[in-house]
Length: 602
Image 1 (cartoon, one colour):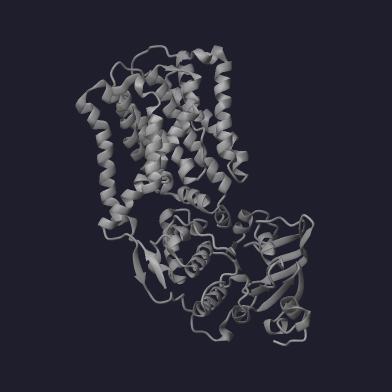
Image 2 (cartoon, rainbow, N blue to C red; image 1 turned 120 degrees about the vertical axis):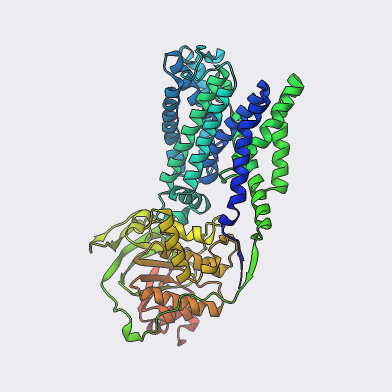
């Protein structure tokens, strides 16, 4: 079996860190050394757009929610700062007022959108951007309407207004550093892992106990607050604001463009995008004057096309590949024999822990999709340390049952009860409720977090029990060792074979330390040798006291694993009992082979 293996990120870290430090130093020192007012303006603009794009990247890159109206939050910050300044309140305070208002607006706009699928958030941000522009035009007494609003020319640090450019550069540079620091802090902690997992596979993230709506709301609130703070500074820098500029759709797209070109979802990609594009457009405007109107749009379009063609992961992606080649760590193919799963301890059947009390009760589950009756009065129980096989022909309703007993689908009638750690039966509703009671599941179609490494995938599950990053990383490595994935911890999940992906999904669930494990066809599509190893792995998991419900079509696995088998056909349980008894049942043979074979024997 061949996997793609990459070196740990730490090997490329010193070079990358030195490059970032050098770039940041250049952004501050070059205008100071040159001393030209226009050069100062260019580098202030770079810092401004780098900060705005970094703020946008928290929600657009990490969380994967495309905001095309992010100037809404920038405009709120700008107007809050100017209005309060004209009332005699320092913009240093107005900055935080604007940030608070922007964060609140972001949550109100985003909450209903994040509960839906599709482009609703992107459309909502565009709509509300226009709403705020119209409001700014309407309330002339407060905002100045279409004529705009001038600030009172009070000079000094208290009012954030200066004759010289250096203080403005210091503030812009400082705010940009704040945005970068917040972005780095989020990405390197649990919230960042959760955001990326939600972006990659929301259903898998929910199964891992991630409150996907909540983490997205945190991301958009932080992003909006940072954008508003930068809006307040820019309003003070310009000394004049008006609705068309502060609530501009083209400005919003421009903010997103820097992240896309620099490397969406990366920490420093937006910085690189701004550092590349802003000088080009600003110098062109300075040299060509009125003849260069609209030139920035042309430049952005050309660079975006080139980036899509030659750098699909942005400038940051290209630099990471170059760094990996220089350090000898880019996608070194590792030839290895079949992965050896953690071996079971040598024990006789008598040493297996006895099957214990009931841990799950499924009672009278019914589910309709329109006029189709998918499940009909499905009832069964699961006991501690038991492996329950769930079999049946395609379309029998097996995955629908799984979705109902893991919170991904609500039954029309019936109930699911799970024993909690205090010995009381609870009735969970959402996937998070099931995860809290120790129920973990895999999916029929594997759902890895493709852009994350094997280690990071498992860490998403480990975070449910270990909130500290180092503790979660250690738990993930231990789980990877037990699952036979240790040699590929630093490989991206997208580089694994189907067998490796299935093993990875089991590892992610086991890192949550579940008491009940729901396996949806984890042995489909793998060879016979790996099936045998997977059986041994499942038995070793069972021997730790974990109860398992397994949907399987591989009869070798069903017969070897199951203590008890339930057969579904047309949404109804047609047989239940010991594996060898069930497969000889005429109703089971008929369900699989038809009436003409009902007389056949196993």
